[in-house]
Length: 237
Ligand SMILES: [Zn+2]
Image: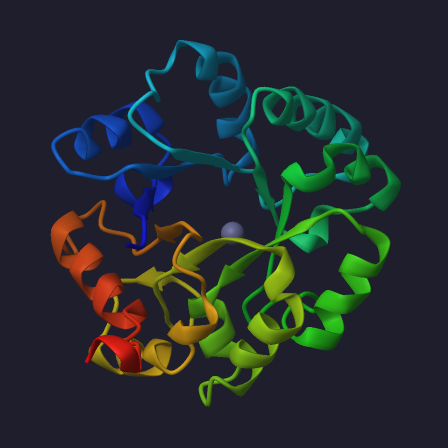
């Protein structure tokens, strides 16, 4: 059975406590604590030891998506402390200014493939450049980004095949042309189904559709994600 969970940022922008509260009534045992904006990061780092996360079998942190190079040392130090407590960090390749520094996170560093706006991290060749300098880093596969970059899903299946041995987490949502994360559409479900077989069952799936303004419901999106990533084995049919 796949594990599905939510990004706190998709449920309540800038308010991880409220997001965790919203998840309480749902049978969800994976979560990503989002600090996508830099000003969310310090409050999350200082609060984490006091959050009740015992019900989750998987908890990751989303590092800020942008900060200046002068802040890199401080961010990595904080992420290293979180890594030592067992929390992996999802990081966008554009903030890896000094790869040697990030190697300190070893296997707790999850590099995410990017949407089409970014000049790096979108394709196998661009991701290979990043992983070459981060040998122990793992892979957070954003299936919505991959589909936006290549709607045929060819690049998505290549990413999964080439970096499958590093795959540790999956992000799922509909990524629209403006690169916003929307509720999952029927077309996205169909596209995602074509690569579901390359995603092992034990890899946690984190949902990112923004539903903080009532755009959809937690249950609805989990149902859609489940439909998108269900694999049918011939043996059981
Ligand atoms: Zn991300």
